[in-house]
Image 1 (cartoon, helix red, strand yellow):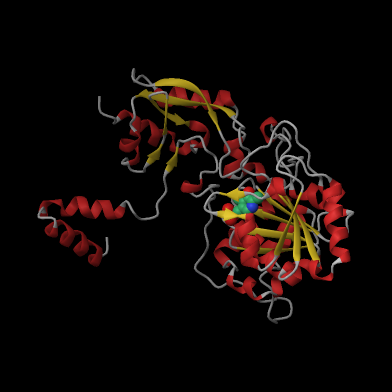
Image 2 (cartoon, helix red, strand yellow):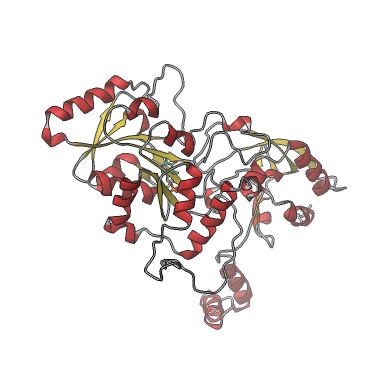
Length: 407
Ligand SMILES: *Cc1c(COP(=O)(O)O)cnc(C)c1O
């Protein structure tokens, strides 16, 4: 550790009247640093653990971030990762910003400031971390026009809002917006309008997909879409159905780095790119490089090899065999059937059958103190390590951490 941090740890120990705690203070400081952890929670997209896992290296070199290598002129930050993502989603153009929330804010600010945006009352979502659609709308300067009810919104509700606005010049409608109910479900007496229906109303339709499933057919998976994806809306099909723009996160079901992707009609994407906020929300070469690799993997139908998709689709019998090896001959450890979840505010209520290793009692603190930290959960009085979210290369580390538990 750098000298000033060691001095700080020593001073803290002395100030506490326990100078021999200096080493413990220094180690506590090390544990606050960003570091790899083993995710044994079974939550594939755990926001506290950085959502989708992704390996990316970048040489310490300059890049053509904004240089057109053909002409030598200034190029566009959107001509690599963003263009490839748009292509993978079947869109004309794309723009990448720092996260999904930034993408929603930018689209509303660039296309609807001082104008109206029509949204169903069933889709005024709050995403974790305080992102609430009505509040983002206010921040962007757009006016929210709510239609329908919490459980039922019909095409007629939208049509009436558009017709009312046509009669009132002050109510100028910029967009019809659809927000994916990412982290909750309304069941029972419900009704919602699909994108194809909304596309006929006139104003451009913007769909905040959230999750970032690229294609409902999952052509990158040999077995096609897994059953747990249910009817999760996908970027390609949403654009094909008539959406003018789609917005999605890079680190949810896309399996890439934290980013927000805006894809769709070239004129609308260009208007977003021109807005002053775009400059404040733009990612650098580190993120764009990682996202470009993800886009290339999708275009090449290799996305099944991305860590997220590899973990999400690992067969249960493989996980069980790994759990048996991790449990080994230790009598305290038992192989258990568990359910993983996608997490990260996606697919609420969906469980993916999995296998793990359980040990009686709550040992989560001891496992977090292991090097590397192992993050597990407690179910029915037992500590469970779900192997679906553990890289097989880390199985020995999990086994080692479990073996060292006292008792
Ligand atoms: C997750 C999500 C967001 C926010 O995306 P971040 O990448 O987390 O900023 C916005 N809208 C919806 C519908 C989402 O599911």
